[in-house]
Each structure stands twice: as C-alpha cells, then as structure tokens.
Length: 96
Image (cartoon, rainbow, N blue to C red; front, side, top):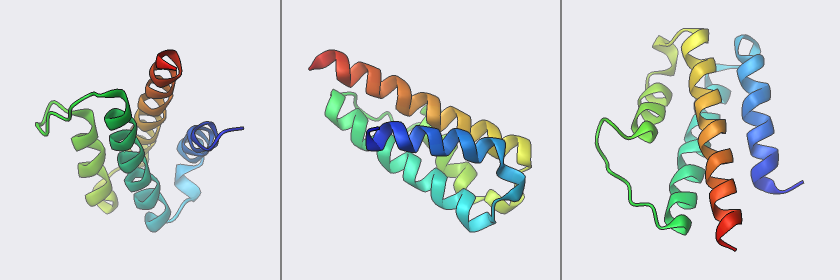
C-alpha cells in the first residue's frame, strides 16, 4: 500500500473515530492533509487560488479552530481531505 493510500485510509478511520481522538491528533491530521494536498496540487500543476473558495482554506480554518468545531464538522473535514487526496492521486496516476 502506498503512503498516499495509507494516509487516505487513516483519514477515513479518524473520521469514523473522531470522538475518540485528542484535539492534537485531529489538528495534526488536518494539517498533514493540507500539506499533502498542496504538494499533490503542485505535482499536478494545479495552482492554489488562496481564496475562501479554495477547499484547503476550509481545512486550515477547521484545523486552526479545532477546539471550537463539533465532531460532525471535524468528521466532514477529515472526509473532505481524504476525498481531495484520493482524487488528486487518481489525477496524478493518470498523468504517468
């Protein structure tokens, strides 16, 4: 299993177990997801918009205010991150 596939699985697992994770673990997962998404976008040649419309900004905002988010909001953010990474992986695999 590749590192990307493992990370996607970890994000999905964490989304399903978010109520059992510490605030630090939730924040760290979202921060790792943001870095991974940005790196994969760079590899794919997709520029970052750096606007509110960019879904990565939503993930960063959620991570920064993790203690003010509900479990459902955190779960949604983790699943969104997993979906973005999975989609980017498919895109990058198609370019090879």
